[in-house]
Image (cartoon, rainbow, N blue to C red; front, side, top):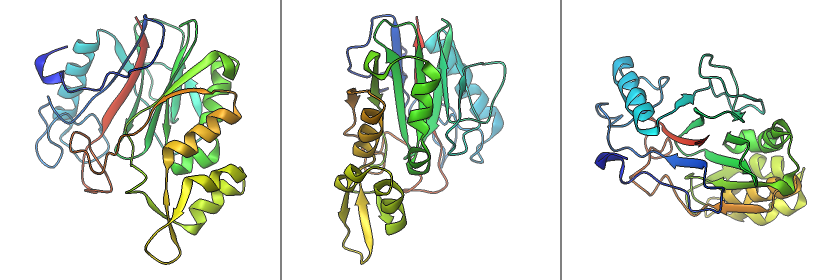
Length: 244
C-alpha cells in the first residue's frame, strides 16, 4: 500500500491467505473539511469529484473493483456486482477481482469468509440491521454452514459511547434473551449503554458462526475514523474483503 494508507486497518484473523481485507481511515484523500480527507461516501454532501477521486485511489491500491451498495439499514444481502448499485446492506462474491464493500461511520461492518476461502461477504450492521436479521441474511446468502464460516468485526461505536433507549434493548431481548447481557443501565434515566459487538456475536452464534474475531474499536473516540455520533456532518470509511 502507499504511505498514506499505512494506517489502514488490516484485520488480524486466521483467514485463508488469498482472502484479503482492509479498513480505510480518514487519511489519504482529497476531500475538504468536514469530510477530510478520504471520504468514500457519495451520499453525505461531499463534493462528487472528491469522492470519485478517493474511490479511484482506493481501487488502484486494492488492485480490484469495489462493489458499492445503497445502504438503507435493511436485511437484504445480494451478490456483489460493481456494475450495479443495488439497495442492500450486504454483498457476497465467489469471484476474484471484486471487493465486497460497506460504508460506515459508527455502524458495525462485518466481514465474513468460508474456511476454504472460496466465498467472502461484507455486511453493514447497525442496530436496526442487526435487529432485522442482517447477519442471518448474509450467512444464508453465502449458502455455507455457519460452522464453515469465520467473521471479523470492524470498527464501530464502542460500548462506552453507544447510549440507546429502552426500545432498542427490547428489540434485541425479545428475540434473544441472551442479548440482555449486551446492555447496561446508563446514567441517564431509562436509557442503556449497548455493546454492538456482543450483540453481533450473539446473532452470529445463532447462525452457527462461532469463529468471530475483531471488535474492540470505538469510532466515536478514535479520530482515525468517521463518526456520525461525534459529528453528524461527516464522511464514511470502507471495510472491504475480496479474493486475491
